[in-house]
Image (tube, rainbow, N blue to C red):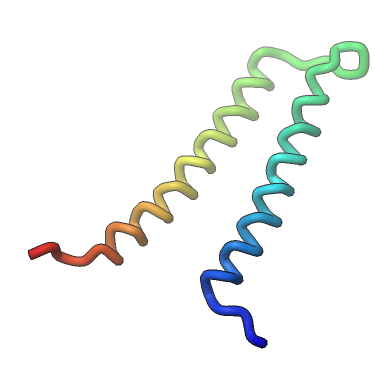
Length: 73
């Protein structure tokens, strides 16, 4: 049986979301100063980049949702 578009979306969103969460946990491991050194500027750059990409990804969904709503009469 072929997977429908929504089923495919749900499957891939789950896989990719879990991978992102795992990578964020691994990123957090870098805060261990017994193993790594970093500056406040390093941390700001990392999180600014992540926040920018998150905003961009969210905006792509919002544009599609707005477009699919159509005109309410």
